[in-house]
Image (cartoon, rainbow, N blue to C red; front, top):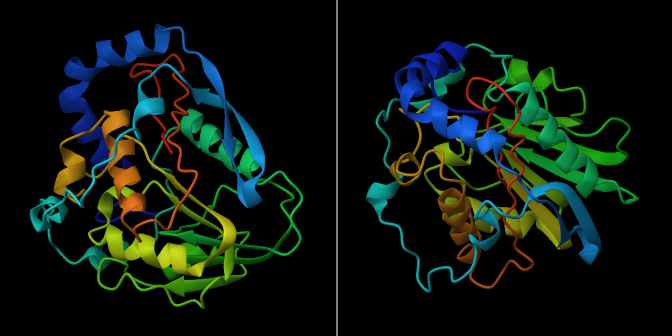
Amino acid sequence: GSTGPRRRAGFSSVLGSVLGTFGSVSRSFAAKKWRRGKSIIGLGGSAVYIKDAITNSGVDEALVSLPDAWPFAASDFRRWSEEDDANGFKEASFERHVDDAAVGALERLYATLLEAPQEGLNLLDLCASWDSHLPEGLQTSRVAVLGMNRQELKANRVATEIHIKDLNRDPKLPFDASAFNVVTLALSIQYLVHPQELFSQMHRVLQSGGMAVVTFSSKSFPWKAISAWSKSFHDGPVQCRTVGTYFKFSPVGGWCNMVALDLSPHKSSILGSDELWA
């Protein structure tokens, strides 16, 4: 899911204007020799090996020495357009907001994190749309999808329940405490204006030993991205540090085993394929 007019043309007009700036940079990144493979702590404290994770891009160190106090001001969460977000969701959109290589990296991440047998897995997908990117055959008891367009959510093949809610108007989640094992938030964090409140809500609805997975890319509708995010397009370490700071203070001391991952495919294409971080 995302906020604002949601058409691929919006990306094209922005990317077309910066092609000369970023094209050569992305191609050189695509040609770089990346080291991949990282072990992390997954669901229930189990060790998980993420084979796509790049360890020499700078993202690995993004969460080192996070700030000691909440560093953001109200102005950091303002956007170029403060038009009602609901206007961008009046019509359903079934387009993907990152390319196929990045989608594949996202789906492999979920498949790896959720491959350990879990009985009665309860999952919440925030800022959801028609595809939650969950692996085929995943055994779940509950998949709650929360987004802003009913038609998109009804098309989600794995959803067991749908919830329509604008998290920028009210970040409180309509679920009981400790209701879920997993919370996912894919490709929408850059649009959220109340991250501290929302991440505290994510913590509240997760069971002990549960896992929150937040994924994001350099792709964005820039007129709806918050100011803090707009200052760091294409900068994975900075964006991972921003999200890590959200976790650290929401609530303070509430999250453990935080890790930043660079899952960017860096396939050969005119822009080197879309980045993906988590």
